[in-house]
Image 1 (cartoon, rainbow, N blue to C red):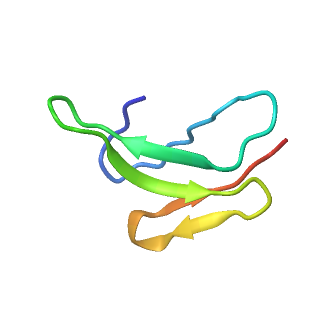
Image 2: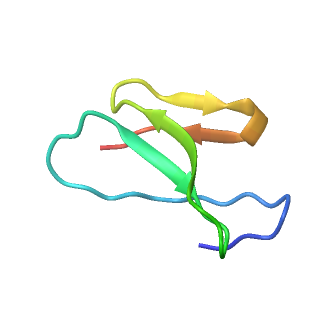
Length: 58
């Protein structure tokens, strides 16, 4: 998904079954993926420097 710089974007990951953790990566064209955040289903996490919050909504 693409977004304009400085604008909010919501990314949704749908999955089935049980997972230990979820991880988000960002990849710019021509670059390697960059790890952004890892969180556990029962423990939301924030990365204020990235203005990023991750939480499970099952």
